[in-house]
Structure formats: C-alpha cells, structure tokens
Amino acid sequence: MPSHLVCFNSSCRAQYPITDVLYNCPKCGGLLEASAPEALDPARLKPLWRERRMSNAPLDQSGVWRYRELLPFDGQFEHVVTIREGNTPLLASPRAAAYGGLRAVTFKHQGFNPTGSFKDNGMTCGASQGRRLGMKRVACVSTGNTSASMAAYAAQAGMQAIIFLPHGNISYGKLAQALEYGAKTLQVEANFDQILKLVRVLAEQLGIYLLNSVNPFRIEGQKTIMAEMLDQRDWHVPDWVVVPGGNLGNVSAFGKALRELQAAGFIDRLPRLAVIQAEGSAPFEAFMHTPTHDSFPTVDHPETLATAIKIGDPVSWPKAWNEVATSGGLVEKVTEQEIADAKAVVGASGIGCEPASAATLAGIRKLTASGRMPPDADVVAILTGNVLKDPDYIYRYHTGGLTAHSGPIKGAFENAPIVVPNDPQKIAALLA
Ligand SMILES: *Cc1c(COP(=O)(O)O)cnc(C)c1O
Image (cartoon, rainbow, N blue to C red; front, top):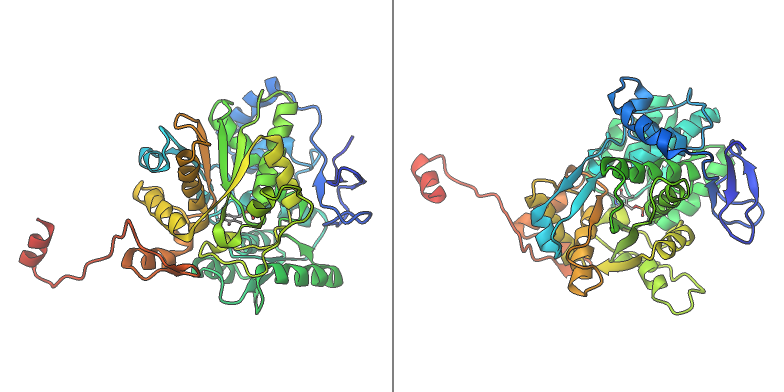
C-alpha cells in the first residue's frame, strides 16, 4: 500500500492521500502522521545504508535521504531538496559526563547541520513535499531555528519563504540567517503560540504551505536522527535518549522512528526517552505529573532564555505523551541557572551548543542526582543547535550580565575576556 496520512487520534485513524494538503484531520481535528513504512528488511537495509556513505550521489550524501526507505515518498525522489543535512557526529565528553553524574555520555550534535540545528533534518523532507505539491510559497512561525532552516531550503528549492517571528524574542544568529537566506521576515508583536494560530489561518487563506512541526513531513525527516544514531552505534540501542522539549516535534519523531525500527526488526528494544523542559515553559512536564491527564495545562506566558524551547502550548503533545509512555521514559524540568551552567560545561568540553540544547545535560544531572538514571547508564543526549546561534547569551554569561525572568544568572564557569595594555611585560606577568 502506498504511503498515506493517518489521523493520530486512536479513536479516528481516518486515512488521506499522501498528497493532500492537511495539517490536522478534517474529521476530528486530531494530529496527522504519515503511515509507517512497509516491508523494511534490516538484513538488506543495514548494509545498504552503510554503503551509501561511500557514494557521491546527493541523496546518499544526505544523512536524511540515505535512510529514504523510512520516508513516505514511495520511491519518488525527483523533488528532493537537500543541503546534505544530517551526517551529524556522536561525540563523547568525559567532562560533561562527570558533571552529569554519569560514567560516560555521548552527544548526538545536530548543530553540525547546514543551518546549525536539527530543523534541517525535518525541513529537507517538508520542503521536498512542498515541491512535490507544486507549492510556490512556504511559511512558518518560529522561535528562530525553523525559520533559518526553512529560509535556506526554500531558497534552494526556488520557493518564497515567509517567516513569522515573535518580535524581540529571537537570537540574532537565527534572525540573521533568515535575512541572509532571503526570506520575507515578519516580526509579530505576540508570542510563538499566538502567532502559530495566526499563521494557520493565513496559510489556509492564501494557499501557502505551512512548514511548522505540525506538518507531518517535518516529523518524518527528523526520524532519521534516530536511524543515523543507531547506524553510527552499529545498532546498539542506548538505555536513554535525552532531548529538550519545546513544541515536542522532535521527541515525537524519535519515538515514531524507534517504534518503526523495532517493528521491522532493526532493534530489539526501545531506549527510554527523557524530555527536558525549561522551568518557565514546562507545560508537558506539568501535564505528565497530573494524576488524571485529562486536560493539558498550557502556559500563557512562557519564559526562558533558551528561546528555542520557549513554547507554552506545544502542538505535538499527544504524540509526545504516547512516545514517552511507550518507551518507559519521563519528563523533567530544569532552571535557567542549571541550563546556563550545563551549557558552559558543554562548551568547556570543546563541543558547545545553544541554550536549549544544554537542557539535556542539566536534566541528566538532575536525573542521576535523584537516582532515576544510574551512573553507568548508556546515554545519548541530543544537542539540538549550534553554539554560534546565540552569542549574546554566551557573552553575557561569561561577563556576569545574564539575567533570566527568574533573576540574574551566576556564571559558575565564568570566563570573561581580559583587557590588557600593549605591554609584553605586563601581559607576561598576567600569564605567569
Ligand atoms: C526547535 C528546537 C528545540 C525544540 O524542539 P521541539 O521539536 O520543538 O520540541 C530545541 N532546541 C533547539 C535548538 C531547537 O531549534
């Protein structure tokens, strides 16, 4: 059966053609997902996927399209737009492990992507679907990285990018990317959640293709982060995968990928998924701790300096809930201070990441301290964005000028630049 869209709502499960332009189920309003791939043969695909790493063909060089059997394109790849996304490394860090209370930790660093975040893994798939549908314009609302990514892919694909950003709440690195890649950029005086509602209306009215993570093709592309991680580990399943949670698309993609790979026999068990949120923007964490789970406690005014996860009404929470529950995972929240210090530790390891990414290490430290994650656990933490995305945050942290909604941050690992006179003796004395 060819790929199709399915309503995620277990009491509906209505099906639609894969080329329908839908973001929610027309019958029940539920989230949509792509049908699971069929007839995957691990004995054939594991060596084939490995072999493609040696190929010079663009599709094979992409760390997303190399795993194209997992994606709902049914052998039709002529519309694919790729900037060789994915191909991100697994990096060990003894220093971060010690800080996190673990014997070892591995970072899967999605900041190595062409526009510097994991959004590229999903965007290549979403933009390719836009092209397959013959779309001329694409739009998104973004805390920054989605717009940077969409702008680049739209430019590559010859589509116009229209970006909606919360005015004054986005890091300069990300805004700069959107401008440089030529996107029409609108700064709206509202927060992410409010703008998403606005953009959905506009997309419908103007026939613009919406590339937020409510778009099921974004989720499909992000599945390959798990496939690539497992391929890089020779299919050894870690005990935990730790990921920051904002709109909750990434954890939804990871869970779907892992379930599909398990069903096809690539792996024999699931890693536990740990989602880490920032304390001022943690509705999913609050939801998971409600006894009955009957309503979702959205946060009207989310706060955090980790702007990539500053989301109070995450679209994908029903999917994320399913994935956390199925994997025996958990959800935790961390403070602004904990994020900032964990980020400095990732940086001091020579790795570096943006603030939202560091929620992973801060979360790990909390989970080991409370005994929920044993010190010898095999842990892969996802660093979602590049260190250069938010240089302002870094400078302020290291010079003692970083202030969150919760109060000033104390730079426990402060490393301020030192102004010196043009005098070799004085500098030598300073360095002695
Ligand atoms: C988008 C983003 C997140 C949040 O991911 P969700 O899928 O929205 O939960 C985390 N970190 C970075 C750097 C991001 O760009």
